[in-house]
Length: 146
Image (tube, rainbow, N blue to C red; front, side, top):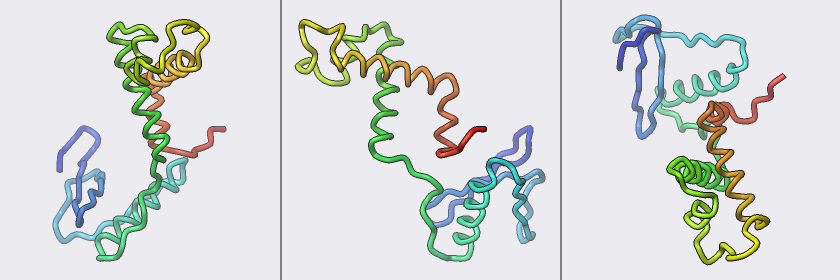
């Protein structure tokens, strides 16, 4: 539990799962609490989290997390971050591609038009997008912006 300018941030460990709770006021042992769920774009995720917390507090089986990234998505995000790290450290796209895909897969000729060069460029651009705030989209997957 820690106090911040916006209120109290609490991590409740129930079983093997951490549940994050925010409160305007310091928590009081034995008090009754209610979840406040504003009708905004985050309602669905907050309602799901509140239900998961209630189930954990009452010894019921947890439902799966609200969203999980697929293995392919996790691997692409990891590659994008690695590509950005290499590029930021001064590595050329070719050196970055060799680190990501192995030197044997990089051709001596026709590098400028090779698929792995294009993929490396896209990975670096994806890493830059994450750094520039795109990581927030990971917190709200499938959300449609109007």
